Structure formats: C-alpha cells, structure tokens
Amino acid sequence: MNLLGLLSVSGKPGLYRMVGNRPSGLVIEPLLGGARQFASSRQHQFTPLESIAIFTDDGDSLPLKEVIGRMIEQREDNPIPAPKSSNEVFREYMLDILPNHDQERVYPSDIKKLVKWFGWLDQSGVLEEEEPKEEE
Image (cartoon, rainbow, N blue to C red; front, side, top):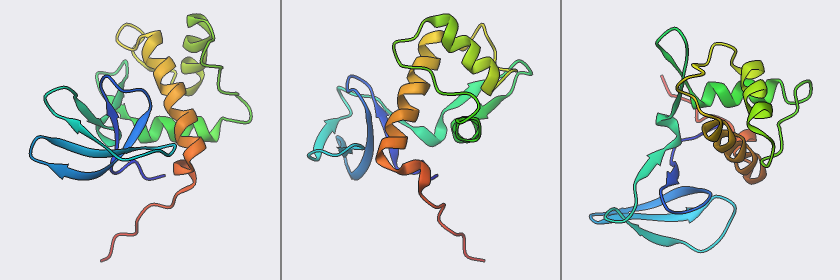
C-alpha cells in the first residue's frame, strides 16, 4: 500500500491524487476516477494521507498506514462497519483494531472518516499496490 501523493482536500468529498503543483494550489484527480481539477490553496487545505496518525494512550501516535494495515489483517475476522453505523459500533471496532487509541482525542467522527477512507482506498486498488523499492 502506497499512500504517497494521496490527499484529503477540505471542502471536497473523497480522496484525491496530486497530479501537479501550481504556485496558488494543486491539480488533483479523484481517487475513484473523474476529471482533473484545480484546487486553490486559498479555498482548500490539503492533508497528505502519509502525514496522518492516530493518537494513542502512551502519548505517541500510530501512522495511518499502520492502522490501515491492521484493518486489512483483521478484515475477515472483524468486518469493517457500515459508514452509517452508530458511534458505539465505530468505537468497538476501533478498540479491536487499535486497543490503545486515545478515546478522548479520537472521536467517532474520526473513526467514521477512517472507515470511509478505507472503503475508497480499497475500491481504487491502492491497498493492493506494491511499495516502491528503495535502491541501495
């Protein structure tokens, strides 16, 4: 799984792949297909998925990539909840995936967003992509 170049864009639903960089914003394309578009940095904030982490009780945080890896590993034994599930269902799911997540700082809305992102990444095939090999 390679999250490099994938973004969440404020004010726009879904996830995006960065295609180009301009002085006043980014050229992006929807992860699930669609036309390329320009997103102005004056109107939107861009959050690279590789920079997102989940807070844990020990004062540290776990990168999104590792959390998604745990979701993949447990997918058969612990099915991913539907996006319209209750907050209690999302919290129970997160306790199974990451038992030491900080329950005061990780809100049900964050878990819901994580579940939606996982679905989009799975549909787009990003979860099956190989990591680029580093040359020695």
